Image (cartoon, rainbow, N blue to C red; front, side, top):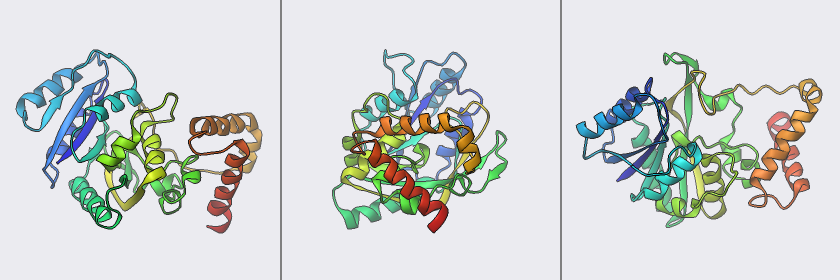
Length: 276
């Protein structure tokens, strides 16, 4: 059994399409647990309707925490998960029909080799506009994300997360290793990836499994990676502040000190832009 965790907030426009894409999955042994983070539109009506139609598959988590933000909301959901495998779901995407099937097959293959340790599998995404028209066939290519490098080195992962939360599946051991979330983390998926890398393994599926919708209101969206030394120098203050922020979010979990962070930052830059 798989628990799919969905945090919603004012998701009326796209939520039905997302939930329908879960119901259309080729793999059907899953439960959907939804927590609303204080919506003021019709999101709760949509959730209640699906809970009534599919009481054995879809459940709403009720708590008194109110609006706590996306990171804390997913943490609460994760705390309530009881299945052996866990996936995260965003309210505005569309899952391709074999997403769950591909993911569970991959993580079970990893278990046969790695045993009882924290494990996580993630995939590429197809970037689409609000009408699901393709912007980019691969988020990884668009953003110059290299999971074959990042997933094997925690120092690189600390500065460039390759794991997009809505694509991941993890086992119970990964959940236990990830909780509780510390304060001031970059995002729940980045924290979970680093936590798993400490004591377990991460692997990936090259095939996109999600239509990653870009509509102007995404908490975090897809961005094309463009490196310009001139632009970096002109915006040196922003460059420094961004790197300091990355360091403080990961230290001391990953890096011994800021010099250690810079060393791996420069090393990863050389791999991406010089060695390739």
